[in-house]
Image 1 (cartoon, rainbow, N blue to C red):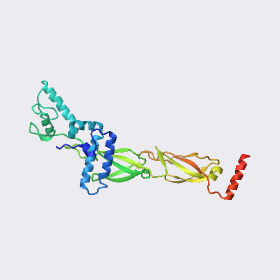
Image 2: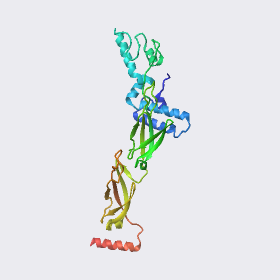
Image 3: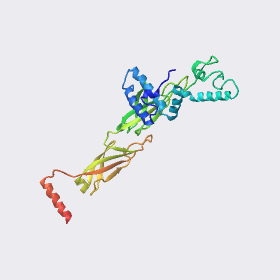
Image 4: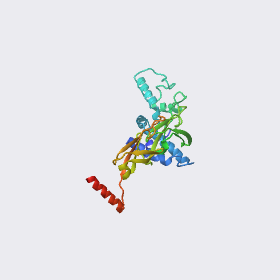
Length: 302
């Protein structure tokens, strides 16, 4: 079986950090994603290789095994057990079958053991294969903040397969969800791998999101701020009327309870919306307005 260089696939070297691996994977996954390369078998195969490489190198334990055992990293435990058995036999231990490998004996060498493990003929003449779980797939889903305000259904194409996905309201930027059994095929009858989807949430709204609370700046004209009144403000799902108290100062905050963002997987639970008032000073005053402001200024100094 030809050796697969996962580092080469991602275009990185063996000293790459976790951040380097993640950056390289994201860049290549976007480039070769099936949605961007429809009916392109070469891009589809490349995308599979990229996912497989990331599945191995992004997990510290898997990467350690891969660095030591190469492509056969998933069978490192079997190999280590075989080594222990050889050492035991070398010290005069009991000869014969090695439990779990049906007839592996001290007469063979380590290469024979690997051949038997991966389906070639062993010393006994019987074919032996080891089951292993399929590789995990990793994908990114880019959404706008307004898309995750409510629960919705999406259909994704992952490695040529259409997957129906329910996205709960309130999913957060960078959050990862796992879908069992939607990864690569298992080897020798082993279970399928899993699919990990990382959400990238972009905010193109006027609201700033902090955890589950929303923040917004609202302009209030000078006269309403001084005399008080009622204004209409935007919330994430509509408009509401809000009373402004007389003498409201610039930077005053108002809290609208449960008008924030939904809490992930908590039906009907929302954060709050915080409104910050920004007092707007009138410009381009008429002569009459200037006179009136001058009179007000005189009254305030008495």
